[in-house]
Image 1 (spheres, rainbow, N blue to C red):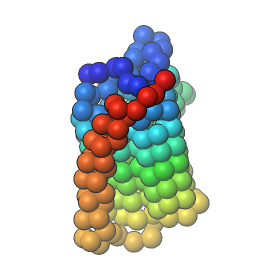
Image 2 (cartoon, rainbow, N blue to C red):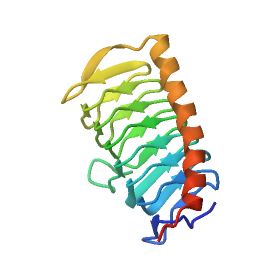
Image 3 (cartoon, rainbow, N blue to C red):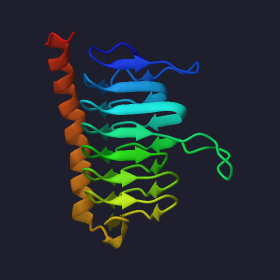
Length: 190
């Protein structure tokens, strides 16, 4: 685990420090605070904020958090003894400017551009929260479902070509992160 990245603010708090796999890419301008864990070949793109000051954030392998996204969590509260950590599985795509807060995104889940997933919601494996949608607290998207709207509602099950397209997107981001990592290494970032 490498915890020094050019142009990235890595901030320990409450005795917890972000843990970043050596193969993960974290773009300059990003801020990682507290109990954050980022898995192998995952990517955190430009100007993302991952703030785990009151609970934890876990990001699996080969997942990508795209530019300008905010990931946060919630502490323990009455009726929520474990709080609301943010748990993001493997091969997850999270689009630009999303707000992901105290929720679970299962392996191969997809969060569209500008979408919001709120506390204790769950996005099932191979499921897609459409661009601009808002998944409210405690809502559960089953595997392979497409939800859209504000508040988000079930639209339909996703066909195989849509699932295949999401997998292509994951592979693209893993490869693209390698190119950006090399470019950042060569850039003069102060």
